[in-house]
Image 1 (cartoon, rainbow, N blue to C red):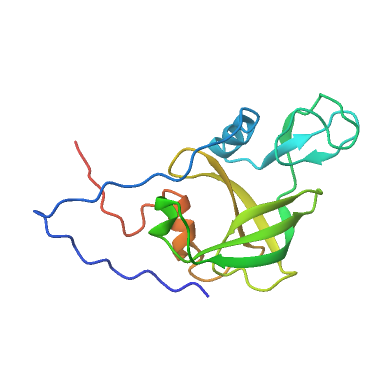
Image 2: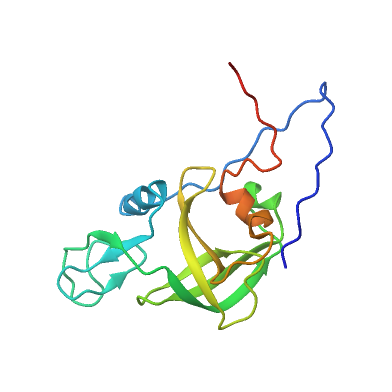
Length: 176
């Protein structure tokens, strides 16, 4: 269950600010279609123009009929959580600050399975989830799974707040 956010203590103004780390950014050229979809707020996957098979990860040819016609189109965003785990130790400096980090494997209603970041309210294998494509702080597309039904304080989940740019309880500088 997601807990409401607590006020963070103020940093002494004369102390040195930590340089923010960026998430890993290595992606393929074909993944640029996912970046475009995430930037426009849409859930899109490659779909074969000949046989209608959805493909993930992005590729050059259809995994079923080997057709090269694989445009990115809007896809159903529902799925079933197949497994979940919590990462406790990592070698990546960005995620090291945010441990534990929950991830899961989701079977999409349209076919492929994806590894995704999990919302704190996604509990139990075989539960229904809704996926979205988000741009992380490094500008790369990531899948994020939330429960299919809304829960209280859904936007207070620490992983969700780390992925999206929500101004709730953040310091803001307004200039005129």
